[in-house]
Amino acid sequence: MTQYARNTNVSVTQSQIEVQAILRRYGANRFGTMEDEKSAYLMFEYQGLLIQIQINMPSKDDFVRTPTGRPRNNAQIEREHEQAIKQKWRALVLAVKAKLEAVESGISTIEQEFLAFVMMPDGKPLADHLVPNLKKIVETGSMPKMLTMGV
Image 1 (cartoon, helix red, strand yellow):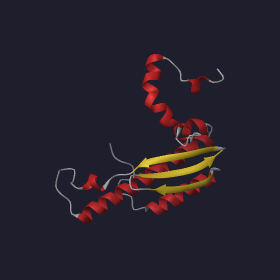
Image 2 (tube, helix red, strand yellow):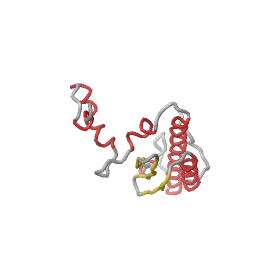
Image 3 (spheres, helix red, strand yellow):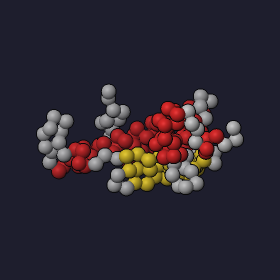
Image 4 (cartoon, helix red, strand yellow):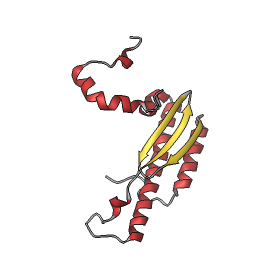
C-alpha cells in the first residue's frame, strides 16, 4: 500500500495554515496546532464540541537505516525524518477535510466523525475512555454506566 503524500513538497507550516483555513470554511472556531517531540496536535471547537486530534510523529531513530538495512548519515536521517513529518500533516489535512465534507454533505454528523477526539471534562479524549475497554464491552455485552445514561 502506498502512503498518501509520501513525496510531498508542502511544508508543515503550509499544511497547518491549510487545515486552519478548512476548519474556518466549515464553521469551526478556536483552533490551533501544537507540537512536542513525539506528537502533533490539532485542536478546534465545532458546534460546541472541543476536539483534539493527536498525531504520533515519527522518531529520528526510525530513519537510521534504509528499508534494506543500510545505515544513513545524519543529513539523510534529518531529510527522511522531515519528509515523514510533512507526510503526516498532509494526511491530517486530507482526513479533516474529508470528515468535514461528510458532515456538510449530510453523510454523517460532527459527533460521528470526531467522536473519538472529543475532549471530556477530565481533559482526555473520549477514545481514551472507550478504546481500552472496547473488546471487553463487546465480549461481555456489558455497557459502561457512562454509555447507558438516559436509556
